[in-house]
Image: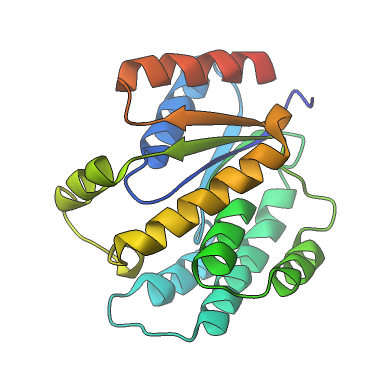
Length: 203
């Protein structure tokens, strides 16, 4: 394991992934460990422009167009990330697994197409560890209701989110050594401590 790993936080809407990645960033800053934190879609200036287009509530893209926009945002962002690869800890809020879970398991886009383009973009850039945050229907709905604003991906039906979450779990179960499943229905302090303990081990 690299001492400057790439660590990803995954999960459906309302699963707590963004909260936990922010907490880890705060922890690394306190420990004076160099890191960079980005989100997908987003990160660099061009990726953030594409993010606004994808998540706009008025957008209504074909599922393949959606995929290509996500991967376009990644392509813009990855060149920036490669500059820090192995030199800084890289924290990513959503990455490869989100593309597969949402676009393949959720929308039914061909997995070979996703993998082909993704591998072309990433080349030797690999993820060292992934935290998969899971959430039940009740808590997901409760958390989405208190958000100040909802984007297009916050407004699908529950059946869609369940398909996506099952997709995430399939990916995690294929490579258990590099995944930690975080049950975000449990006490948040308990999960914070669990994640930090794993982070210490990775570093």
